[in-house]
Image: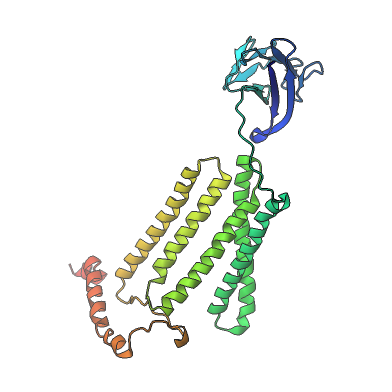
Length: 340
């Protein structure tokens, strides 16, 4: 097989701007690089000489680069070389002026082609927007349902819904724009559809899960703490969102991105829960209440009878006095400090 090589002109983010195929004119293949029209690879770079460098390929497939007396020389592996003759190009990348070139040969191992499932290409292109539209609809419906159930005055419902929609769109828009900018810097493309889909899909799932938990918790009489369960669910959702954004918008490995995306929300959620539990323990007037008032038709498992519920109220004052005594021992009042 005769030696053949392809010289690629790279742009930002290693995207190929042009390709030049150079066939062998004998036992070796070679080409010249520069701004002059006599060169085989013509570059539009003011920092490149008229005839700047020569790239050669021997019969064994080894690539070498020579500087043809240019002012700026050539750069290989981060080292700038002047007047070098036949410098080996191990990784196939050389910088000429301010332009990066990549040399590919027949010895390169090419990845196998992707499997074509036979589906129309428009379906693949439209999958992301369709998922985004569905997730956005579910997210808005979930937020609207929450506003509707928490609005006491009917005449304030329309204002609350419009405010919710505007705030949600503004917050999501800023968040998606920041991650799209990060993707643009890292990969040269915004990928805003992916980032928007990550946000709204997770928010839609979160809304459905929270609603299902509230219904099951009240209907089955589980009496689970909504704050604790809600914090866990929100922490999982935040981990998924952050991990998805990091994988999409950064060049770090997927396992590192997931580890960072899980660690940050976990630390924040645990810290907030600890601070809240500590504040509740130090408050004599705090009484935990996990019960929900639901219509009898929604109750699958009944709760305590009225007599059993009132019997548990007898020790509320004793528990409050014990907690007050504990707080006073831990943090004496100013009057007691003055008396000592």
